[in-house]
Image (cartoon, rainbow, N blue to C red):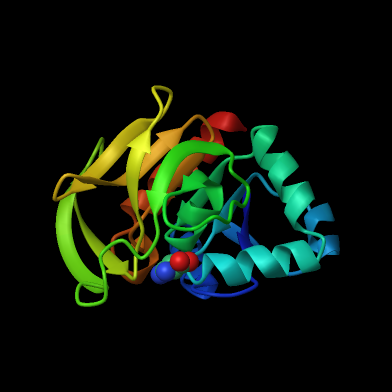
Length: 190
Ligand code: GLN
């Protein structure tokens, strides 16, 4: 198994380290020719959704990756990655891949609470650490979306078929279970 990590901006190295700890090899996607290497899943890291969206479009990565996701490639978006996958962003007219039937709110926790740490239940895993950095949350989901975690009544993790998103950054804590969850999604698909 090989998992690609979008490596244009943001916290991609941390995801690669998590995969390495799980014994899964990763490849970085930085330019168009990287898409030719075989991979079984894709991680879209946290960072800035607008910057990642712009760079992907400029580098000719956007359309081919969108197509791969639509064709069923397992994808895991964290934070900015969630915003890139969301069909709608409540407070931003931009839309990116728009492959997941969720509405997200960008920078949803305001300035004071921009970053925080908590622990909450993740469906099928149990209580896990969650680090939020100027995070979005999910405002609403369609029926075909499974809600996996909520904090203070706001949805912070969800799954729709091949797409997994978290508003928090599991790559910034020591707990490997969300990455393991994604690796399981990838191996079930393979
Ligand atoms: N606020 C960022 C955005 O709008 C997301 C923050 C993050 O990925 N840590 O894209």
